[in-house]
Length: 356
Image (cartoon, rainbow, N blue to C red; front, side, top):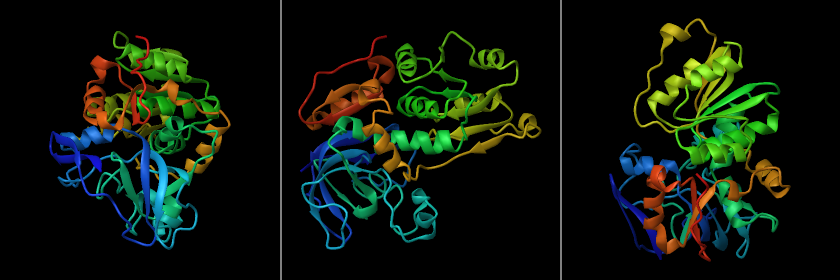
């Protein structure tokens, strides 16, 4: 089969690799029908995730059809169309029992495209299939479903729930890439007073308005001043960092009100300063986290009911699987291409870009 293989910092190729097979009784082998590229994959290529070994197939988000299962798998069978979660869960360890599957001690957690071969391939082996894949209803398309593999549960759990977004809150989301857009959309489920999206790219701000942002702040504006003006000088109740760079995190800590919450969602490859000289007296809560995906069944039901934005609100480019390297190039040059979320699969579609 073909797969996107990591060969070390800055190096990857779409190449022939051996087909995956069942290794443990809880495994499923899935034919990939739709897959996407995550900002974390770009962090891996930059060398920010050193535990990823050369030779690893990248990717942790996909939808596909089960083609084979191990003897212990009970919840899916060959022929089922399923969502592959970015987190696998043994279901038995302390953290899985606490609904913190991202910290799984039994061989799960974030392993696909990280410590084992991932989903950017024609076929993928998924361990702990009973708890790590989700049968899909016919009402949910593969393109919509792939958003539930990572970005929607990550934004909802690590951003909205960790940030304790509530009715009447002012919520500021710094970064309007795929995670930021998913944060805006899921924050709106809690009827905040206003949601403010901050980004340099006009097309991302347009997309943020499309998924529920009330106010957008671009490169020619000062988000800290605007947030202060909108809140009577207090600051936002919740600020979500959805970029993964030190400057964005530090800006978030300046935008939050006393007693407010900063929820870091972005993947950081460099240290960020924690300015305790100004934060020590503000009673600010700062949270971090890796998604656990405990919310995926709920979000899947909401997607089927039309309560979450469709993929068309976030997917800007579509490719065939064989165009994987072209898709990476497009996604990595988002400032020039306008890419938000790219989806690969069959059949192919024309490339579509959001208006600027």
